[in-house]
Amino acid sequence: MTRTRLGRIAVAGAAALIAATSLTACSGSSGGGSTSAATTEWKLTTTTAAPSGDIDAYTFALYAEPATLDYAYAFDYPDNQVLANVCESLLRLNPDYTLSPGLAKSFANPDPLTWVYELRDGVTFHDGTPMTAADAVASMNRIMDPEVGSSWFSVYQNVESVTQTGPMEVTVKTKIPDSQFNLGMGGSAGVVESAATLAAKGKDYGNSTGGVNCTGPFSLKQWKSGESVTLERYDGYWDKDLRAKSKQMTFAIIPDATARVNALKSGSVDGSWMVPLEAAAQLQASGKGDMLYAPSSATSDLVISNMNGPLGDKRVRQALMLALDRKGILKAASQNIGEVSDVLTTKLVWASASPEATRTAFDDVTHYDQDIAKAKKLVEEAGATGKELTYVTAPIGNEFAVVSQATMAAAESIGLKLKIQTVTPAQYTALFSDPSAREGVDLFYTVWYLSSPDALEMYGVLRTGDFSNYGGWSDPEFDDTVNKAIGTFDPAERSVLTAKAQQIANEELPWLPLTAGPLPLFLGKRITGLQPSMAFLYYPWAAEIGKR
Image 1 (cartoon, rainbow, N blue to C red):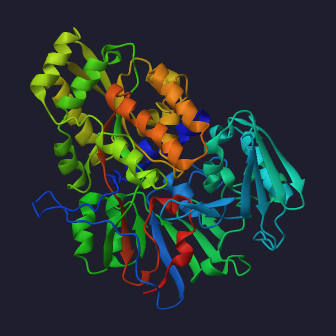
Image 2 (image 1 turned 120 degrees about the vertical axis):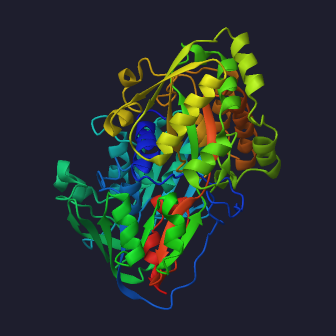
Image 3 (image 1 turned 45 degrees about the vertical axis):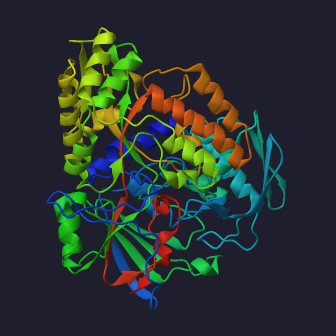
């Protein structure tokens, strides 16, 4: 992506770990663990028991206050897990990472440069006004407006125009064939907001003063800055199958991880996404609810941000990968919840791929088992022995500390020097948005998640010249493969090309994949009904929760 990816990285890298969660990702396996002291038993959970009935109210904890509820900028975990229950998109990203009709009851792709969306009749915004095609056009064109500077701009980077072509019909014309555009309509890039509200609220839209006026199962009732965000059931909601089972739900803003865990243990808060993994065992033993582990689309990675230094030589990147004690990282940072990963995606985003392409993408790749002797030899061959690397980290959470120390140990074990530079969380976040912040920086840590049901989203950002290709890596074969995949509309055919892109990235290592593991969730004993999934950032999960 261009501008949008900086937001996602700030989310996945900085914000996720400000929560001190040790969040990693899901490889799609049914992982488990032994009972050693540093291991927590776990398994993936995709469903919870159906509710016994409705509930008046319940509370979820947020590790940080939303920066905004403006769909054009919402790229953080706190922002999107709230917004997912209030605002809706043309398509719906389901918990199993499939797409289904949302505010658009159907869509068509009559030619490679055209997408046509037929909107539902009878949908109303929270102020009671009907949704129209004009609202969808205004909402989508707003993301394309360079004056807005939307974090989702890159979803529209190949769009020529968005126009109303019927009473409830919207037509999107693209400059080149772009299979990824429609896949992005299940996220914030596809949100439909009232055009009248956007015009009336102006710069206050999406903040604690202006609020939002969308179509979801909940409306925004109150936002007390620094304290809470309260939603109430919208009784005029169009989708009867997702009618909210609670009259009200509140997000309690609790930045301190210890206080958040204590609130869950005491039962004063009913649930929380992204629970600190170091607290998983004590929460499970509290008797106040269940620790659950949801499928995730995220991987933990080291971003190579300087291809002009020693890491510009592939042999040095491979050597560092071989030297890293990734099993040790998994144990120390994540209680062995998850697994080591040699690739930059998880199987959650390969659901529409052909079985053969998936096998190729995950099995027919290099597996970088730790081998110090081999790594040291590669460094010597590259003439990099004694060269210094600069690694930037921040005092964000346990996982940051674990990864930085493991990287230093790996570098020193193979004859490299590593200087660790600690910056503030804000300065760390700037690494993803400001090229000047990356000057002289060789690598840094992030957790990167995908928002569409296609692994190609990951590899599109590593093409030559892409905003999020932070190190300036360039590989003509990779670029050609990804560009061909973007123009391929059949999911199975596209997955073959995406598997090839994953193989190239696995060999060239523009980023170093570390681990993959689940999304931790605590569900209190009063509530049940949701489907645990990374799709909680876009799917109206809170509407499913009722009385246990």
